[in-house]
Length: 307
Figure 1 (cartoon, rainbow, N blue to C red):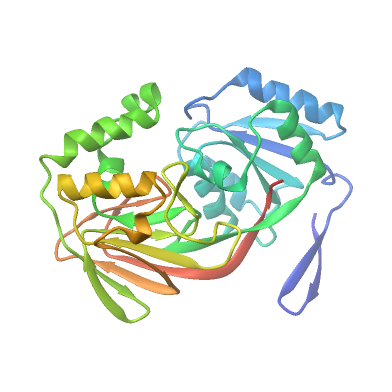
Figure 2: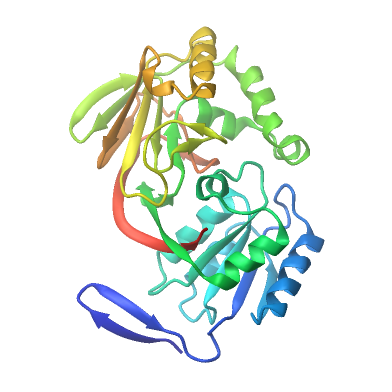
């Protein structure tokens, strides 16, 4: 049972005794870097700190979202042990939850860009202490065709790579799998043009990335702000031929993508990414069908554990 006190549009949740301090760790055992021993270590440390802790392993795609959508979920803290895609699943489920528990992350997976964005610890002792301390920040997110994204939603070459990378290669090689797939795809693909409409202004390009976070693909900064700041930014690249892609890659490595020739970074509230034909799209590093994409910022937030 949950009790609520309403004041205007804000709800303050009162924890009943059986919920207070309870932690549920939901783990995706197929994520890269998954370690049962590490999870047991975190759980044991939390139990030593006085937190009743349960580990639940998922058995199918979408299960994290179903768990997070359950309005009777009897926990104060839900911790996702997985990659950015697993966190996205949790946010998708929280959309249908009247008062989501606070969210924590144990960084497994391939990229863990959100963990980098938030400066999350990687060792079991520090993770357990962070969860027990309960300090939260408000995690903002955007919507792409109604689907939450906390990092990015994009269309173009990067999404084609996300669609094309073999799961077996991704599990075996991690980030290197994306590099190999990009090289295989880049020289044989047929480029497509995009029409990007930002708050009514029309732009054209070959790649469009709507970003809710500062980082993209790892430690590379593509825009100001961050996932705990309100607002979205759009990166539009005019070209995506091999030489231009190489130049943009160098600019990204140097943290100067916003100053690269043929690149534009701009804040926005609503955007459309359109194409004459279907162009591959991705959300938070997972395939997300194809264009068109309707993207907007939202004033909703989720409390997330962070230093």
